[in-house]
Amino acid sequence: MSWNDYYERRDAIDSVLVRAGKNPGGPLPQSPAFTDPAQLLLAMHYRWTMKLTGRLGTALSEAENDPSADMVDAISDAWRQVVADNPTLYAVLEAHADRYEELRPQRQAEKRTLALAAGLAEAHEPTEEITRVGAAFRTLLQTAAEQPARKCGVVEQLLRRLVASA
Image (cartoon, rainbow, N blue to C red; front, side):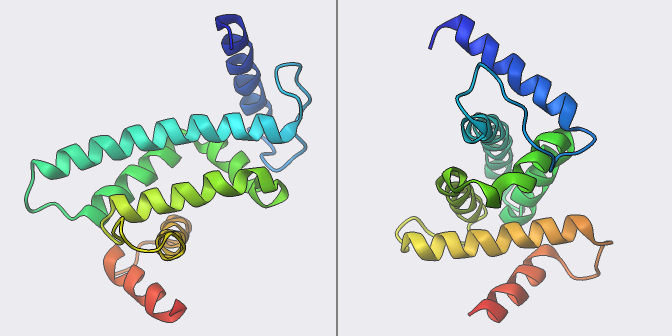
């Protein structure tokens, strides 16, 4: 990919995000920079992944320097911050995720990343188990973001979900 291609794709994504601000679940526009909507969504998910992994890396670095840090809380805060900083990108990806099978591997990898970063799973565990734990954690994060604050902590909410899903 040339620099011109990069800038064309970046501008196309930016344009889609501006238009999608009012209707994130609406049809995705055609763009000469992408062969089809799935390619556009994959590029958008790549952008999301870069933002998320950057924030997770920062959270992990900060937690290493603070022995009292709770990894689940640190990763939860990082995820929430990326969503807050990129609400339209997040909304478009969520709205279209189930419509495009091409996004499945990337979304599964994101779930595993969250589970591993939060210390809820170990790398030696089966991939399916890590993905399941990450899915439960991500669902908890999404649900908590949509509901008013509860009295119990994130870890307690996660444990309740994991026990229920076992």
